[in-house]
Image (tube, rainbow, N blue to C red):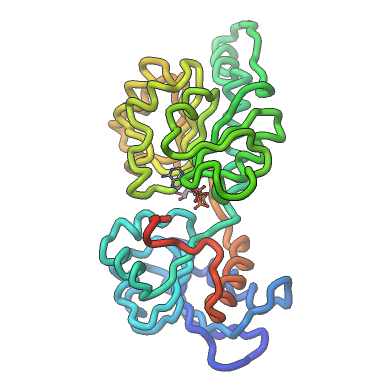
Length: 342
Ligand SMILES: NC(=O)c1ccc[n+]([C@@H]2O[C@H](COP(=O)([O-])OP(=O)(O)OC[C@H]3O[C@@H](n4cnc5c(N)ncnc54)[C@H](OP(=O)(O)O)[C@@H]3O)[C@@H](O)[C@H]2O)c1
């Protein structure tokens, strides 16, 4: 499948190959509509779109594209594209790409530029996080259990107000989670690689910590939310030692990547009641294997990586913004730095 979309034809179109598992056509249509509509952001050039519905189809088009838009394609295949100057990843995490050493080296040598989806996942992730904070504070699991048993079991629900929530990772998703949590009356702490130093404290955050202060950060929280990218520096960061610093009744919510946490240590920590609960959307291995011990723990809520699902239409403006930036050599929104791994 291939077509040209031009709001105004000025010069040859940029060649864009689109592949997103099971949704390539929807995304290709969303990019096309974004280019055609005389909206907030004007398309800087026409685009010629080709759609690789399957990965094999995308691979067969490897000699053709200037730009790859999409996700779920193996880094080896992207490296086979000789004309490629820019990859706009349709998902937020790029750890699978950068784990492939030749790909990471090619990025470090500026063979192409790489940007990831930013500004789309914060609102759904914030709703997910706050939904489970409220769920556990209100004792919804106990309520449902009592109802199944037809038992009139009164208890005193907790309140979010006055509790402290910490967000590890204050980027495009963590920043939004922090803002929304502060609006609900939680005291919000944050942790980021750059620590407290650069610029003003992000909106709604009472205290900002750096990576070397993680133990102090973690031990002061009622809710710990992981919204970090998976990089060499963050893999396994939440180790047995750090989990042991969490308060007994605290809640760990992981919406970043499974491998941020040592999963074996987490199972032991949950058995010991520290943290008291875990709400997990991401896992070391996905789908979470049936034999995982996490499934049978009574204090775990498991969701199948759905906290921050994006819709094709959401990404049109980001694509246009970055297309213009790419054409002019300016900074891309969500541009990935090879040296930092995110
Ligand atoms: N569950 C889902 O459905 C879902 C959806 C979207 C995203 N995600 C995951 O969430 C991750 C984060 O996304 P994002 O868009 O918010 O990323 P981002 O904008 O790049 O923000 C990353 C944040 O992590 C901080 N950070 C990086 N390395 C660190 C370290 N070693 N110690 C402490 N802080 C560190 C950064 O610090 P600085 O501010 O100092 O740079 C930044 O604040 C993605 O990589 C993806 O894996 C999951």
